Image (tube, rainbow, N blue to C red; front, side, top):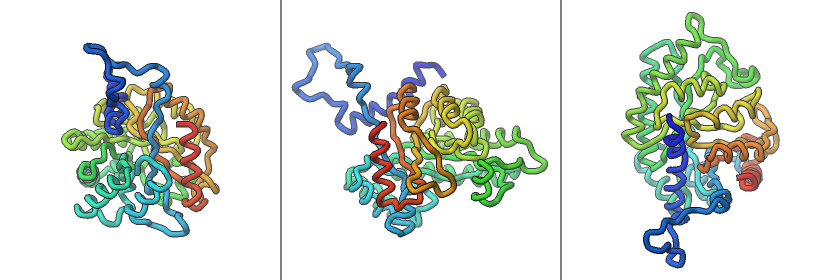
Length: 325
């Protein structure tokens, strides 16, 4: 991918979003002379703030309640001052067309963008039928995102599942043995082939797949980049999660930011009250600097993983992210 193509992929969505928000349309008082072209000043460009959304995942402990409905979360997020909401697909109890339309119209009515759809799939299986089942599942998730007007979905590679308990997996820093009789090379081939089968649907519906550094074969930056750079499609980009690396976290985040493949969404973890599985000391001034150096102007999506009640932990997190982004 050329530098020009990568730059276009990174800046075009932000430019479109800016126009949609009204910031990209000059007022009559600033209309340029005939034939002149308005150019943003370097100072103005440097002051562009990232829009900040929140994942529905963040509200598991809101006032002691669990599994708030998406409509409730939209109201809470709007009241807290977020710009958008990312939906966690596996927590949605109703995905009927009527409910999806209600979510979409309610988001519009409270002034929020639906800016991400976090999905789960597992392509790491020696059974071709199981991989195809997950391909079909992901195509269905792409179609759901399109019905909601969401431009990107988070996808996973899946994992070997040789450590069944997620708590045990986290205790082992996300590392698990390869399934007996198979190799990691096979795993990468399965994942690449499966994602390539989903790409035509992504292009047809205008929904970018964002592969996240989320355990499995994308547990490391090297593993994630091997997949996205091998496929090399504008319909497969990177979902950049700030909290899913245990070792050399900053170095690995820099590797992802430096890739020829663009970042389509940033998921920002916070841990007020201590983390559910682990607590990381994330320096968001440093993360913001990495993303600015990369030219990232897109969405920041909060994933609050702290034990503090979300009613207080989420607003604290928004304040932290606003300070740096």
